[in-house]
Image 1 (cartoon, helix red, strand yellow):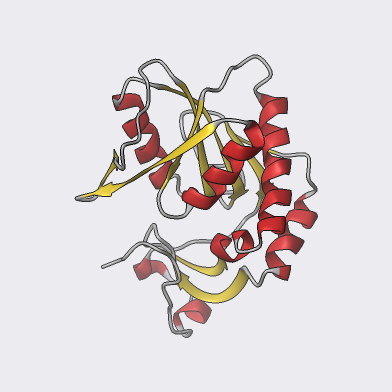
Image 2: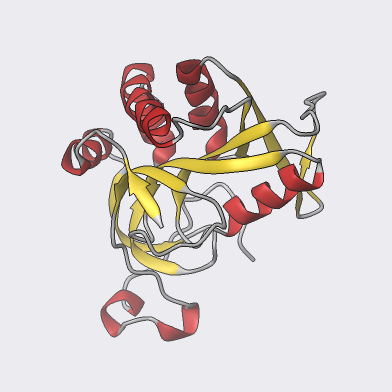
Length: 201
């Protein structure tokens, strides 16, 4: 179950609204599900000051939740987690690397290395179904490291997602998501857009 950070949920969402990053309409998420709500974290992280504020709060939440666990490295899935992961690494005083898709599967590239036995914190911008997170965790585990937990700015599963590791988020929200063949009539009437970074067939 997800745990939320010390920064008040409304404060976090206000930062998203101020950045024009909390959108309403009809969106196709990177998971392929459809939703009337979209969180565009790239716009939030566009401001270095706003990104620093949010990631400092998230880093403090991580420190509070992992008091007995040493973390060696931050790993994020590309693309959405790259900037958040970098800033989280900076806030935690750790190196930060990212995995990216090669033929549809996450892999470590660009000369990055993860030592066997390293204790890794996976960092995402938004967690919805947890698919990208689980794939990132599997990649890190296959390389011989240990994923001790995950941190994200937003948990849009509202605490229901199961990643197999502890999830710490600044804000948990309930944002409905539907398969394409199960859209509510009101949502089906609105043209769908794909604002995410990953191509969806």
